[in-house]
Image 1 (cartoon, one colour):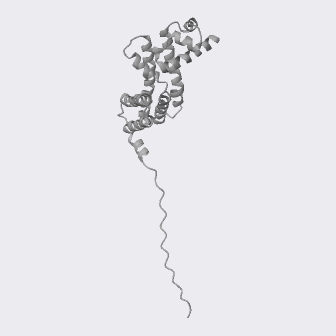
Image 2 (tube, rainbow, N blue to C red):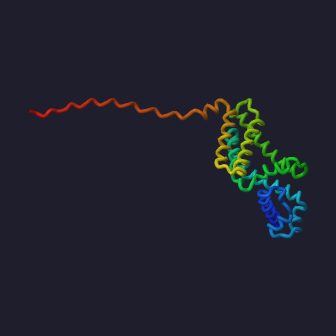
Image 3 (tube, rainbow, N blue to C red):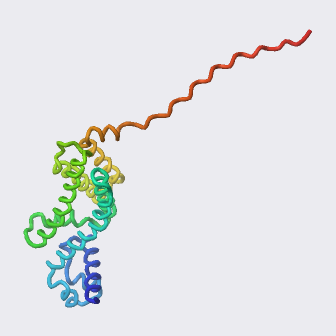
Length: 227
């Protein structure tokens, strides 16, 4: 029990370090210093720097799933669930602006570096994208999106907004990036919405009928004073 708690403590510290310094910034020595443990104590739980990096990727994915995927799955199938998935993803990236997203930073670090760490990161990212693609296909089957919607194309466009949000908010420090990303998603969505759904979304609520105008009152006759 104590061993699991110690490992969890080390993983939390490693995740915080990786968020700020990247997966390549992780080391047994840095973790030992942060957790005030010996290097041998940290090493005993992971065995190698590579295993530590992979464990951090899995821990990040588990937290991402708990905060984004699982809550969104409670939404109704189809468009409501698809919206919930992207809404929570936007929120997650916005929260991570100061710390950084390991999915995004890890892709930059390991895009051209084959090996177990890249494989683990790729597997986690692919799992998430597969879930999004399934949600898009379910929305098509439910009649919420056009039957000719290309799920991979829609996912590509929406994922591009996530990358733009991360870039503009984190690197450029541009205010309003989150609102622009959300507006972009609505534009993507409007392109793929089924006709009946698009009509329902676009149709303004019927304005209440105006009350009939009251007839103008007849002018009152002036009384003349008696003579």
